[in-house]
Length: 216
Length: 216
Image (cartoon, rainbow over all chains, first blue to last red; front, side, top):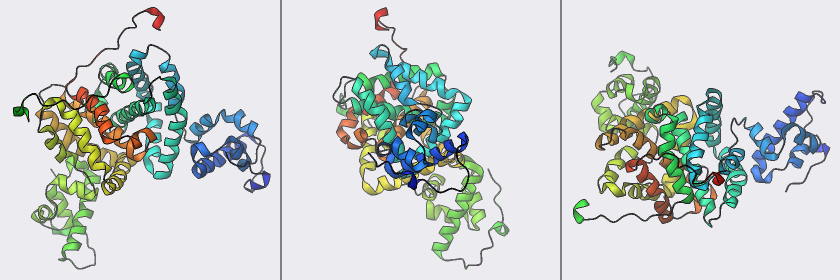
């Protein structure tokens, strides 16, 4: 919740208003500032509209929801918050495999990969941006997906899934570690699918004791 | 292999030499430039010494191996290349749990965490630094560890382990996703230990077919 500031708050730039492109730019600039100032959760479409000196309806018209606006501001080529629901819509016991195949198929595309690498770098670049992105992921991905699962520890499970996916993306596309970069999608699906599935539906397992003292 | 340049190559800074601190700084500056120019693999202690205008023995005296020098240049608070061998020295079927406990215990320490977060951000910040760090990880961690394992796909397995560890560090310490940030070490060991172990010694598993058409 923020106070929707009156028109007086809007920045007094000298250039004419009323042109679509200019208003879009004003909204993006206002959103960038508001997300940085209040975080993803704290920022509101009303507050952003007030800062840009436009009606909130215009923000929705150009950009859709707050999540859509955030994705536009970050120039995100992927929308994990939307994709998650599609992936969850199928048998529970094969979500891990479907998730890995979906993510790798999308990211293996040249343009997505290039923009996605930029996005990952930006998301991890400094404390303020990391917090903002983490707040978005928490509000739009981790919490809603956890709410659709039945386990009491669902949020931790979904967060662990995110950690494995994030690590996979960084290893294959950002660090480009040779074995990860060169592996086929099918191979990675068969290797990472079951670990994702474990995080979602497997049981925690204590460290096994050595079978004989000689093992240690 | 680089040509060890003669003294004439050393930068003609005006300040006096011969003081330990100054020579150390010269070596760090030369190493930073050389790693950036030739990558981790391409850079040599001989080449770095030549650029700094010192004897290679002095580089070894101050910094140890090329890996040690690289870690000093990056101000790395952790040394995965060294830790890996300690973790591998024990029963193979519980490496996953030992690895997660070791990593989280080290990173939960305030000072390591703070420096470690800086290091992760730096490692992922731009293409040149990512390549340099990836080249170090490949040469000093992934290849040597893979060589100690018996599987033909060992490098991919070790790279997948790295991806899960990297994702866990980013989720818990950089993005600080609430469920990951607040989980106890014991809980994470019991959850992530088995997934790391899977990557190392488990078999790839194809996506299970839905048991009945109604599942889909």
